Image (cartoon, rainbow, N blue to C red; front, side, top):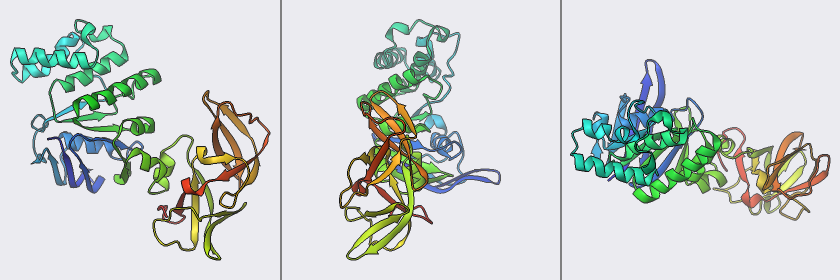
Length: 360
């Protein structure tokens, strides 16, 4: 069983605390991505789970066993690092089998595991090559295979694709997804790349300054961010944030801003609404061009920048004196200097408290 439980863990270096009282539960067979900016503590958390860092407080359980003070080799994990770290004088076959041979595994077992990993990662034709004869993507596949041959219950990935070019990242991302579907093993993956997180994860844990801001499915992280940090970190271009105020108007509620008001009749408030300063967050693809309706506020602007991206086009304009971005179809006729109208569908928008940043 590969369930991972991090319970009230604290890790620090000297007087500097990376995180205090951090807890996270990862189910057996789940793919969880730790996502956040550099220095948020995601790699530190992964290394603590792996046993490469001692915890100052708390417990780490893997497969129903308390492994807080167990050696990495006794935790039932396989780990893939950002650096390939292959033995340059060894063939691919020897790189894959070296750890098993050192552990004293039977020769037949070693050959079986290496053959299985090579088949899964499409390395069968490369087993006799040295690392210098491989591409970057092939080397990273060998590094992943070296973890796979351990037949572990939990696999840990520390930004394994960050050293690769965009095309190779796309290809290996698909391979890792296939790998998880085939193995059904627990996987914990660290990255600062939101595309990797959204495409790979069953759940994403978004971290900031050693604190998990939100852990949820990619759909909920993207469409229902818990606060302004999550909303701003996920999505490219970033979510548009419009300053204003939630106000009571007769029997209904509105979001009043410098350009007018947006009716909030279809907004899914988490609790009872109250008048307060707020931010209305709208994804670029949820800003429509067209006529206003009772629950859609039409405002006008001028196209300042057009960024053609093939299947879609990013349009930059101004709203209430601040930049606003729209994602429209790549065949859209919008041109630089055009006067446009944009509408907000509040059912797909997000409201945040202006002072705390928390979702309303």
